[in-house]
Length: 85
Image (cartoon, rainbow, N blue to C red; front, top):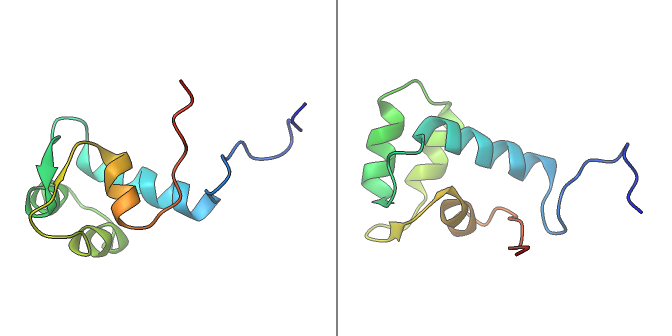
């Protein structure tokens, strides 16, 4: 049984990674996918993203297509949850 007072993070993730991924997801929205690095940066710049979000997006490899924020997080080396189903 899990402790309800502990954060519900999957193994391999930490709170900082979760917060970074959430900030990226918030800056990009749902309509941008699939997209490459340049498209993601342009989409984020339509709003007022945190400097960290733009910095992270600029670190993505050029020419690679991303299907969702999970793939972006993996490319950035952030901890991600494993598929459960």
